[in-house]
Length: 304
Picture 1 (tube, rainbow, N blue to C red):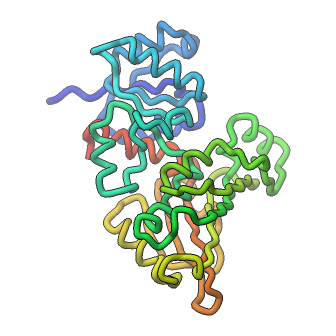
Picture 2: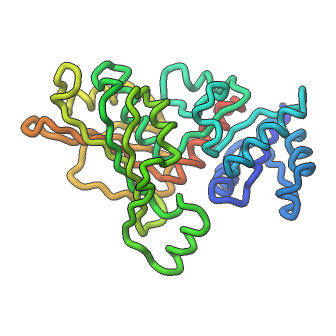
Picture 3: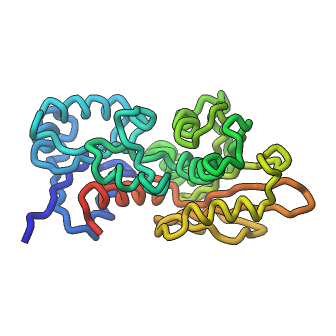
């Protein structure tokens, strides 16, 4: 029997790291851990990397860049890397870990030495936009406006503690400098030439997310209907296990896919208004983080 591949999660005590660790219990892998007291010790981390076939980085951006350098210092013993931070998502030397991005993307991930796990908001936005741009219906220079709401679990330890301690706020806009760190990722991987306007928000619920993008159909190529946009998305994601294009609803709850690794895409609109609303619903900790990492781990380790 072949030896099980070894996975080391650098940063396994964080929200994403814990989610990945839990999901790895379903895979035929051996998880390598280090003493929690040594989790910031460079030598201990580097030794753990040398033991691993795949290292998953669940660290702040600067620490992920340091970890990349540490792995490179191992030379021929360097492991493959899957990074969950923002550090390398627009780096052309890393493969973007969105398997449904194109017919070739899953294969690129499976053979890549370094893969960047997508962000939660970009997963929804890119999932909606890229197929329409590739189909030539949505112009790459379209002035895209993205609104999104996420559960508070995506805000890190301090936000989680504040919501669970104080019970709110019920709804809060943030990132109002319009310089959110996910904007370059959306801009790059959606295939846009014009910088998108992105307005994120957080609600008083733990997990779940909706990303919504309004469109003026009269400004799109060929004056398509909402049904035409639905068909383009449906063809692009046909046969995919984790992304579903479904019938539009009149209401949407952001929490409906909590604890799921699925993403649902919808096109809302009527022939009378010549407007459409694209929505993506997912779990910010599932397909938006740990669930996406599990997809990439399976591909990188050749696991069905």
